[in-house]
Structures are given as C-alpha cells and as structure tokens.
Length: 316
Image (tube, rainbow, N blue to C red; front, side, top):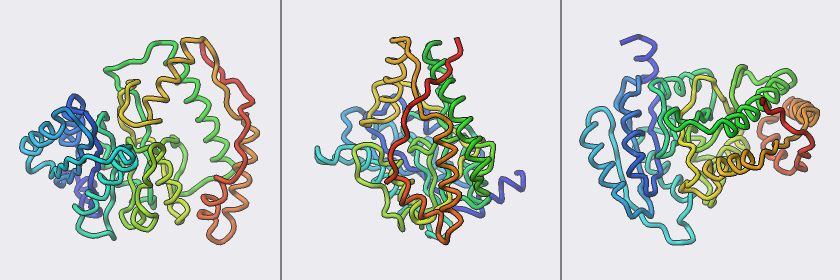
C-alpha cells in the first residue's frame, strides 16, 4: 500500500455517521461507496434508522454482513416522538452513536453524511489530510449526482450561483486569508459531508436539536469555540437533486426553490460584492484580536443581513 495512505489511517480514528429515514432505496449506494474507500483501515459506520416504515434497517443489516471486515456497521432503529422527529435529533443520535464507536477523543473525528450521498473513493483520505494540515472542521462540496442530471435551465442557475460564490471567496481570500483554509476552496459545510474533531464536537455541545439547519448550527457552535473550518477542493460528495427530501428545510427545499425559479425564468438576487468586501475587512480587524476566530463566530450572527441588491449573471 502507498505509505501516504497507510499513514493517514494510523494518524486518525474516524467514524462515518448516517441518519436515515425511509432510505432503503438509497442506502445500498452509500454503503457500497464507503466500502470502496481508499482508506486502509476498517471503517466504523454508525447508522440510525429513525421513524421509518420501509426496510431500511434490514438493508443496513444485510450490508453489515456483506461488508464485514471492511465496514464495521452499527445500526440502530429508533422512533422519535413527533416533536423530536426531525433532522437535529436524527443527526445527533447518529453522531453520538459514532462517538461511542471511537477509541479516544484526542485523535478521533466524526464524519457526518446523508443516506442519499455517494462519496468518491478518496473522500475519507482527503478529509484526513485536511485535518493533518490543521483543520478542526472539514466541509465537503456538494456535487449533483451524475446519474440524475439537472434540467438545463436549473443547471444554468446553479452555475450562476457557483460563479458568484467563487467571486465571493476570491474577495475573502484577498482581504482575510486563512492559513488552514487556503485557496482554491469551495464553500459548503453541510451535514452531507461534514467532519469534526470528536473533542470539539463534545465541547461545542453536540448537534443542536433543531428541526432544520442543525448542521449549520453545529458549525457555528464549533467556530465559537475557536474551531478552524476548512473547505478543501478535493473533499466532496455526490448528492441526489431530489425535491422530496426527508429533512425539513434541507437540500430538497433548496432544489425545489431552484427548479421553481428556473420555471419562472427569473434571475436570483444576492448581496453585491462590496458588502462582502466590507464583511471581510471587518473579520480581518476582529481576527487580529486575541481569540479573534471565536469573536467573529459569536458576533457575526448579530450583524444585520446583507441586502440582496444584485442580480446574478446567468449564462444563456
């Protein structure tokens, strides 16, 4: 085996954590992709099947036997009360289960993903290398599943957003560069591909019990503890562009909005670039203070929202 790949599995322990709700059709793809990882050590996988009425549990249990020796799968079936039957409860249960599968906090990492994803073979190895470079949290870019291509009008809108965020990141990299999150980088850090040091996960209070946005809230809490967030270009996963998602306010809603905007033939609006320049300068000034990273994370949510005063350029 290549020395670099052997070293990565010696330097870090990790567990992949998967909440799943009625995902019997999608789970085989995810679990096969995890088994195909270039990661040299056996891969712990914590799956929490929650509030499901399909055979998701049986699908995972069969995969546990099929991939024995490659994937160390722990599967749990739970039914949350109606007021807790949401993404926050499910992801917290999955990541807490993963925490229990790891030998020690000091060198351990929890890797969150969703049941409808298909990570490429180098996913875990590239995540580990980002931690070796000094990150405490590693976000993965969301790529649309190639087997489910977007209609052309929707693809153009997504491309317009991608171009916009590349420009925003270039502004930030010029005015407030971060050594642990160097350019080129993407900007995604959602539950579909989100890794966090286990000790930081515990220190920041674990996944908040929110019906939606639990992944963003976890990242915000980790940043408020001084965590360093990285977005390496080589960390990404493929995700279904379906519009009938399981989580309230998740990617399925974003895709629904994109399809709806394309159907109306409208251009999306976003904050003009001058607002991002002002925000980057503000971050740079605050970051220069002691504990600046945590100060930014605590102060930024209190700022007034940027006005959406610019229409995005959409390629015909």
